[in-house]
Image (cartoon, rainbow, N blue to C red):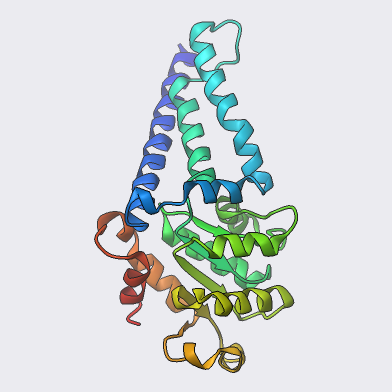
Length: 258
């Protein structure tokens, strides 16, 4: 009897996870303004270059197979409630194939890690993407960061270039300026992706940004502090799910009164 109750609870939880995965799918399609604009393949290519992405590639079919086989031969295979298996697989699949709607760039320092965690909490159900090293963050922040992590084994520059090419909204934290951040900033200007980028600065970094910005981009540069951006993201909430007719980037701009 206790095992039956546990299976019911796990199946219910699996159903909720599956519903969240479907909600994330719909929100992402609307954020990209149609399924034909969603770069599923490019997102998956980027995902499998990270440890987390490779784990999902193995985890998804193994979980579904175990759940189905347990229904056929309960005494032979490991107990796995069917809908719980589908729910876990749905979450893993949405983290591997669904393209992110927001890319966060910056160095792996405490201020950027905390900022990224705050953005993640306000951007649900849409996916965010970052390539930050999480070892310097506390446990609460690290849990959020794992959900958006695509920390690659090698060639992080290639991963940045690939992600900048298709993610519709980019945020770069310039409060800590390092060599990798310099590369990311230059790439945004060289490709014109700065037009869909928010630049997070403080009193010290704003003058550096202004000196490095090409003249043709200075008029339309979106520069703001971290607290204002986080407030705007949280204010949007499920905006990408509720309002399919407008571009995600423009909704963020309007929410922040830019």
